[in-house]
Image (cartoon, rainbow, N blue to C red; front, side, top):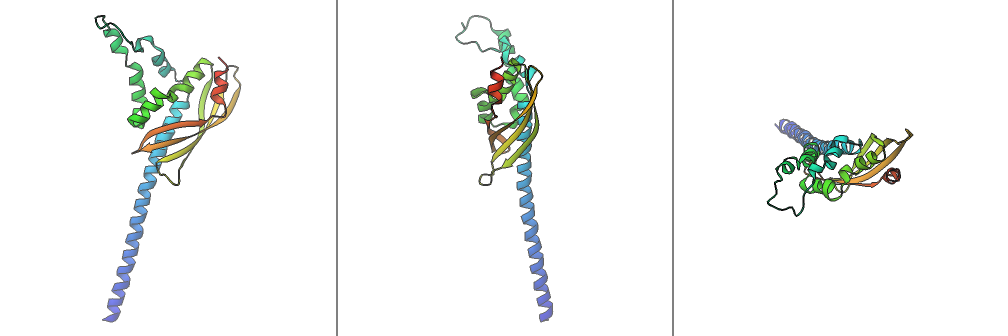
Amino acid sequence: MKKTSMYSLILLNTLAIFTLLGCGNGSGETLNNEDDKNKEVIEVVLEKTLNAPDKVLLSKLYDSDNATIINQDEQSSTSSVQEKENDFDQYIEENYGEYFTDYGFEKFFITSGEGYRYSDEADKANYTLAPEDISIIQDEKNDQRYEFDVTVKYIDEKNDEGTRVLNGRVEMDDGKINSLNINDDEGLLKEIMSNP
């Protein structure tokens, strides 16, 4: 009887250990899946932003019909302007909106212009940019913070080629970008802007 109880106790303890280990792996997988999804979101946005110039985005950005009219007389007719006024907003919302929180979207496109800065400057200077390698690392202390490095190949107006490594930081919130900042581009933007 004691042997049976002892074997039962060992069996129960063994099952309990395997159950706990199994649960631990499941929660780890959940964290890894969230981390993978966050990295995927960041990568998509970096690819879209740094494949430049984005001619469609720029055509909508600079279309005079998309301009916001300030202090216009209320009696004048603006129906044609109002219909097209949102083309740029619709384009960036359709192409980037799902990846950002409202705050992150506003900051990336409206406040800082980071979302189209490289496209705009590359277009003006006749440069072409293409991300070749993207490395994204989750912060050890804050699981919603990521650091990234992007190797960007560029071709300038003389068809000379080169690469630069851009790095920055991303803050995530519930699977969406709350903040994306390019902190260093090894002088790429400055070089592009000096070649109008």
